[in-house]
Amino acid sequence: MTSSTLLHLFLFSSLFFSWFPNAKPQGNELDFSYIEGSPNGPENWGNLKPEWATCGNGKEQSPVVLARENMEVVSTLGPLERSYMATNAILKNRGYDIRLGWTGDAGSLVINETVYYLKQIHWHSPAEHATFDGTRYDLESHLVHESEDQKIAVIGVLHRLGYPDPLLRELEDYIKQISTVYSEVDVGVVDPRFISIQDTTYYRYMGSLTTPPCTEGVVWTITNKFGTVSQSQIDLLKGAVDNSATNNARPLQPINSRTILFNIPPLSEAGSHAI
Image 1 (cartoon, one colour):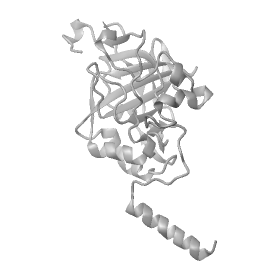
Image 2 (tube, rainbow, N blue to C red):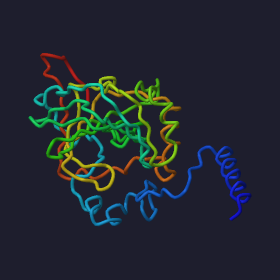
Image 3 (cartoon, rainbow, N blue to C red):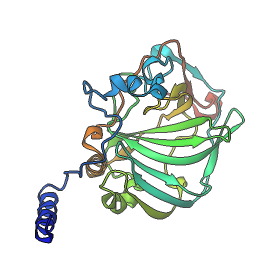
């Protein structure tokens, strides 16, 4: 191939991606997709790799509907024991989502005397978990924690459309820089205390990762306080990932025999509560 031909190919590809800014370079295909009915769609995740079998045959899969008929109201779990701190972080485009991963000690969460260290936060749009009436909101943030023996605990925050999310607002320029699948950028120091989380009123249940390998035994905490997110922030997240993950919410999974605990502060401390 002559240098003239190479030059023409380069100019054509540059023009193509300037004409179609949402078009994504090929060659970085994902192992799974969120397109229902496709060969590697959610209903087929368990068949794609032997190590992903739990996605298809697991009995404690996530996400779920936070349904009243499977709910038990308690006041014994107590406030979330969080002790976060600022440290360096890397923002990565994983193709199926955008993930902010802390590279230093970002602090921890304690559940039942087990210490889970904060590792990363990523986003799903629309939200994966549904409220008791079946509503799935516009965005869900997942703060992923891991213990020394590799147990996982996730805090989920649901977001309604409204004011911009403060953390995403700080990351918007960086997200624009990683519009290519599997690219990443160092964003410097990020303080997870910047994330607003309801520590006293929340849902708790045992579930799984919502992406392959769909590992079970995950301690899920879904806060009862909604965040907000702007439409432009949602568009930014959706536009950066692979076309097969534009709507990167896994379908709702059967609750089976599980019970969802709804923790509220004792009435003597906080008065009445609404579910």
